[in-house]
Every structure is written in C-alpha cells, then in structure tokens.
Image (cartoon, rainbow, N blue to C red; front, side):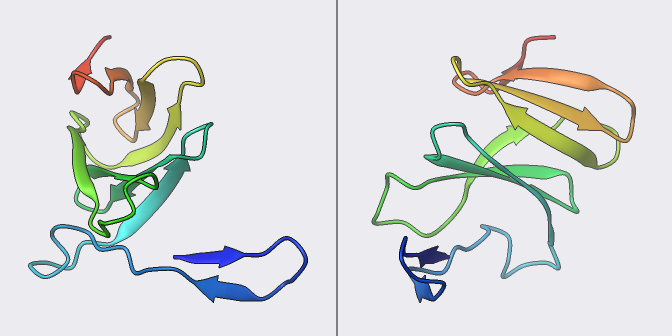
Length: 108
C-alpha cells in the first residue's frame, strides 16, 4: 500500500497487505471497492471470496474474510452503501445480492 502526499507526485510505501490464502493457493485479486468514508477496502478474488481490510486498524496487514459470496461464478462488481453497512454485489450469474456487512448475511 502506498500513499501520495498532496504536494508531490511521489508515492510513499506504507505497508504490504496480505490475503489470508496467499500462501496456500494462486488466489488473485479481481476487483476492489472502497467504502465511501475510505476506511474499509473490499477485495474480490478469482476464487469468489470477499475480503475486507480496515485502514483504521494500524497494527494489521492481513485482509479479514468478509462474506461468503453466494454467487455462482465470480463477482463482477460490488458497491458499499454510504449510510448503512450494506454491500451490493453483482455476479456473472446475473444475480444482484444485498448484504448486511454486520451480520454477513444476504438481505435479498
């Protein structure tokens, strides 16, 4: 992870972020979604896993398992709600799923 200062185009190294399964398999990040308050990063992988990383937790560099995607096939995109802990995912199975990020369950 890198950070760019406001008055420079130079990037400063902050830390390395690690997928929990990165030592076991060839899991590849396919998509990223940043929460509107820029505190949480969601990651979708080629194995249909969703992970989350909280920037407020300075002591960790490992993504946490977010939810079981429930899609048949990969997730095309995901969007986080601005006002509530809700995630919308769209998969290649043509299903739109709405998730409660606190309970980690499908709402619809």
